[in-house]
Every structure is written in structure tokens, then in C-alpha cells.
Image (tube, rainbow, N blue to C red; front, side):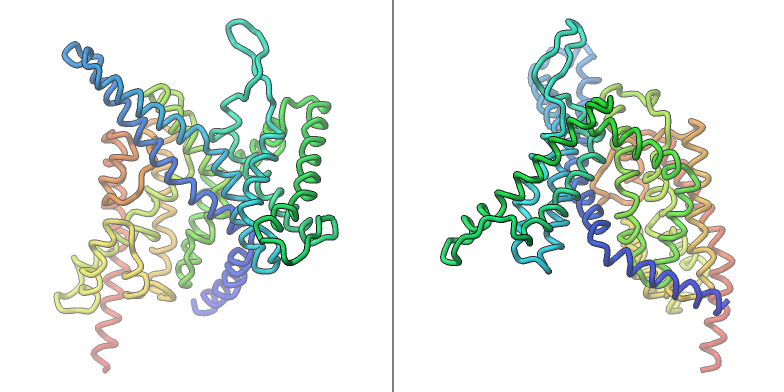
Length: 441
């Protein structure tokens, strides 16, 4: 067992360092985390609007003008917050990557990089749309280039623009001004030639894509990158692999979610946002045909935090002696655990590098993921279609995420009871071993 743990520690340590030191992956993670508040606002606005619209169908409420105004306001907020996620991602990804470059390149301006990425993104977007009814071609931008459908393309353009900008401002292809010039003006002139080069590159790329027979860069990227990656990176095997890696990293004291989210967020989050958008438009689950991987890994597989430690806390409260340190730690971790905060248990029990906790901590989330995946994919449980702030207790949180439907809560309760049963024998062994150690002292 010790050889196995040493092997994992050595290899996972190297893996985590590579991920943590990778500027691109960290920028992706930070960009998607930054986008979450906009999705939360959009989700809740649309959810409340649905309830109001349902209420206004009743004769006693249908004539209340104020409700109609509130519904329209909520609709505008929801549609805008959700409909501009591509813009948020292109700005955020370019900014965070440029900010990471700033440590080694004082000439780079993160704000300029973000704005340049935004303009570069617009350079690649078609400027004509076809009216569905009249079939007339009109000047304008189609909404799918700015919502969740455009997120992956926006991410690539944001990162590429920032990387090119970082390279170009360090070369001789910039306008030189005396040091006496104010920094704001100096930065603006420094960026002129890089801006010309980068926008020209993306403009030529747009034309080349059109000549190749694709309607836009988004269509090309979707065909060659998004669809193949989604086919192999969003199913149950991918979910299991990600959970195993996250749990193994946590077992060695490394923040598994922070390390892995930068790798998977660009593939997983757009699927969830698509489901949120479909439910907001149809007020029905029928149009949702796939399972959002992040809802399985982050909600059902991690009840009370990584490793489903809320069940561990309950098991400790059931089996640990009244005055034992384990029971004290469980009491300390109960309230935070209800809000998915489990560091008190992970480091206080501890779980980190504790061979007795290795099997349940790593594999119980996998069991939860498998059960919940099939429960959702078969239609037994409705999908989660709301992104919230995550500040509610775990079961209330699931009720909100599931648009106030009962089946997600029932699934979580069933998994929670199962997790307690699975943790129980390991807790008993740990308590017995700890008591023997205490007796020897």
C-alpha cells in the first residue's frame, strides 16, 4: 500500500505542477470562473420569469400590468446575461493570459490585450444574417456567435490574440516613443502595429475559411475541434477519469477541482449553459437530450464537497465515541459540509495521506457519478437546468438547480444514504485503529 501511495504521490505531484504552472490552462479556468456570476444572474432571471409567466396565465393575475413589466425586465436581464457569454469569455481569457505574461513582459497591457481580442473576435464573425420569413439578407450579427455556442471559438481567439500580442510587443515591430511620453500614450502607440498585424491575420483567416466552404470560424472549429472533443470528453468514461484525478490530487493535499477545472471547463460548461438556455426558452426538459458532465461531477458525485465527505461526517457522528477527537472534527465540519466546504475534515481528520480513507474518498464519488449518470440519461431524474451561486445547503441547492423539481433531491438523498453505508466500515476500522494507538500512548 505504501509503495502504491508513493507511486501516486510522485506522479500526481509532477502532473499537478505542470497544470498549476501552465499559464494557458490557468487562464481558461479563471475565465470560466469569472463567467459564472453572469450565468447565475441569467439563470435566476429566466427561472423567476417562468414562474411569473405561469402565474399570468391565470385570469386573476393576467391583467396585472406590473407583472408583465417585471417579466419583461427579467427576460431582458436573463437573455442578455446568457446571450453574451462568448463576449465575456473572449475578454476574460485574453485578459488573464496577458496578465500572466506581465510578470516577464512589462510592455504588455492586459486591458489592451482583452480589447484587441474582442475586436479580433468581431473580425471573424459574419456581418450578414438571413431573415427566416422573407429570406432577405440583412446586415447584422447572428446571436449564436455571442452566447454559449460561441464560447469555445471566443476562448481560442482570446488566448491566441493574447499570445500573439505578447510576442509582438517584445519585437522591434512597434512604434518607439521617448520615455518622457506619459505611460497611457506610450502603451497606446506601442500596441498600434501589433493591432494591425493581429487584426489582419484574423481577417485573412476569415476569408480563407469562407473559401474553404465554411460559413465562419465558429463553424470550422465546431466541425474539427468541438464535436470530436465532445464525443470523447463529455461522456461517462471522461467523467470517471476526471473525478478519479480530482480525488487523487485531493488525497495528496492538492486542490483537485482548481487544477482540473482549467482542463475541462471549456468542454463541460457550454453543455450546461446550452441546457439552461433550452429550458429557459421552452420551459420543458424534452429538448435536453444529453447529460451535462459538470452536474454529475460537481453535484451528485461530490455531496458535501470532494469525496462526498458530508456522508463521512454523519458516519463519524454515528459511530465515533462522544468525547473522541474524530467526533469533535465531525461536529466542526458539519455546518461547513452542508455548504460543500470540507477542508476541516480533509485536513483535520485527516483524509490527506490517510491510507484507511483512500478507497472510500476516491471511489465513492465515482459510484455516485455512475448511478446519477444513468438516472439522468434514462429520464428517471430530470436534468439540472439552473446555475446558482452555490451558497445554499446541498439539498436545497439541488432543488434550485433542478428548477424546483423533486426527482434530483430524491436522487441526492438516495446517494447520500448509500454514501453513509459505504463510509461506515472504513470509519469503524479507522476508529478502532486510532483507539489502539491512543491506548499504546
